[in-house]
Length: 354
Length: 272
Image (tube, rainbow over all chains, first blue to last red):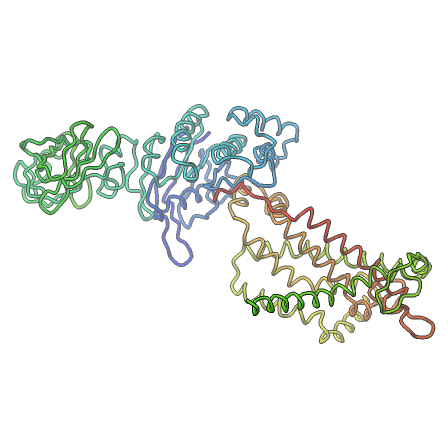
């Protein structure tokens, strides 16, 4: 087990596309770390560069205090689960799990024993003679995990480990993966484009955009205090309200309403500065009665989220969304008021958090 | 309605004629060897085995079949091994002008064993002391088959996902291990196809061995067939038909065997 450190890591593809732009990142030993970002942001390239499947154009990759930048993938002592699992279709489950050991020239009996042990741990004991084609998606994923576990590598790399599972199975696999990683205690980096997955599983995460890391932090930090408007709009299952406004003395003028300056930005926005006011729909209190510092408007849409509803208000020519608990949802066309929580609202200036 | 019926009748008549056209020679091939004095007609055989005895007694008939096996299997093995390595490299490594190279190879291949290259090939074989040598013939036949084999196998290689190999690579497998453990099993149906194709090609090749092998003990069955005449200079139909049957059986068996064994593809392991 080992920490992973990236120093000024750069990857330029032939043709001049800069996939990674001088990234610095330190992942301590044993951490479950998520790389999150929209498609094309460089997260998979970053993972493949750590694995050694892509060569870095600049900077270095250090795994457990060993500079592995110039080493072949096989010499880096990492193991990877591919998005399509890449189980060998001509080998049964035992041979698939034992394959890394075959490369290390472990005797057949010993590696089959190890495969049986790892397979049993992941509940694959009754499937060991099957071919990958005879397994369900969830079982294939567990075989891929077992194969990685059999390597006893310093670090694990997962490329979109859940994206090939059905929605229901994905939730189960999420819990399973997190529990497994905790038990094994092996440094694990995984790539995902699903913010909910990253928030749910990771100890810490990096949010990436076009080759840059836009924020590193725990899921709670990233969710509650997105460092910039990109992260703010990317994280959260209901998108954050990001509204243009201007500082007016002690208050902010946003979308034609006067709202209080959030706690985090108190005394830090001079009079007259243009700002973006951010507040998550979950951090709004909805009411049918007018209130001081609330956004007032007409209810345009009510979306059912299960145990709550997402209410969209037309405030002037912008929209403001608020989450309303079940039972108190308004009707379309009603007048409504959404009061942001002062301790949860955020102010961005020039795209960055104040 | 009548038009339709007439059309159908015409269609089936045409099919029947075509079928007869192709099946009568085959029918002759199965009946003539068992007939005492075969002519060009298809007759009900009298089930004599004399013709087979005659073939067995012919000094070069059976050895020539063995020579055919040596030549075709030797060439097929060389073609499969070399084409697999070349196709893998061409499929995975980006070379400038790779596709142009492939098409040029394919074009040239029809020339190498074609009639135009006969004289230079003969001279080359003489210079290299490979004239009248089965090894030399195998090398030349291999050279002729390789470009098309590489072209076909590259297609197979292109269609296997890269993540299998990348996965093996991260586990530390060397390029040759990747080829042996992962690529070859994945493209096995392709390799089998190429092998069958190569065997069938060499088995039926007359011109090259006829030109390059003068020693009758080294000549394959295709060349020996050409020598089966009676003393009077007439085609010896009883020998020809019997030998022809023996000559075609191994290839038919090989097709059946390979299509039974490799007539399926692996599925799964990659979630699509």
